[in-house]
Amino acid sequence: MTITPIELFEEPLQIDETIAPGVLDYGPDVRQVSPLPVKGQADLLVEHRSEERGPSSQVNDIRLRASYHGDFEVLCARCVEPVPQSLSGDFDLVFRPAEADSESGEHSITPDETEIGYYEESGLLLEDVVREQVLLSLPSRTLCKPDCKGLCPRCGQNQNIATCSCEKASADPRWNALAGLADKLEVKH
Image 1 (cartoon, helix red, strand yellow):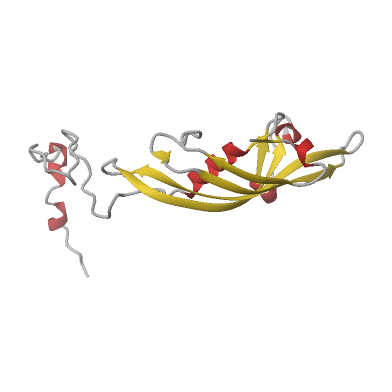
Image 2 (tube, helix red, strand yellow):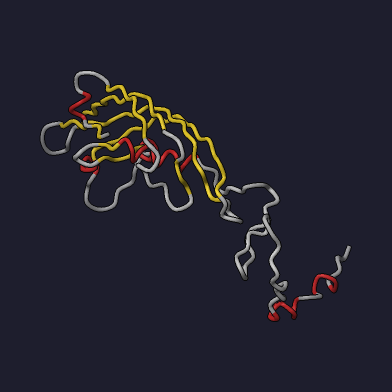
């Protein structure tokens, strides 16, 4: 769904969309497994700017407030088995036309400007915003269980399911010089 400022001049746009599984690509470790309802509203925020040389202009910002909820599978960080995750979230974001702040050269931004996203001339894609919000709501690391044993580094066997017959890896001989160092160090009082 593309949201454009023209749609918002008369009144806010009510959003009641459902994103089907497989429509959005969240990356190789995340898969949407249920429909993802998105409900909210898009409003037009008109910012009047006075230009140093010439008449004042206006910038059509889009404020998007919405919520979502759905079921996902995220791969375990150790054994790469899918882990079910229910996600939901609310967001309240402001988007500005990309060309509105396209001054040449470097310039500093205000703290308020760090909270602004940008949309292209064709409009703001709701799916892009939802994808980003889902990815931001995921935990930084997902485990299938706290004591997940992971995969064997030699054969790739999931060690939660079966024990492989690989030999235990010997320590890298370059570490031998440090082997007894901790025992030799004494804390002096």
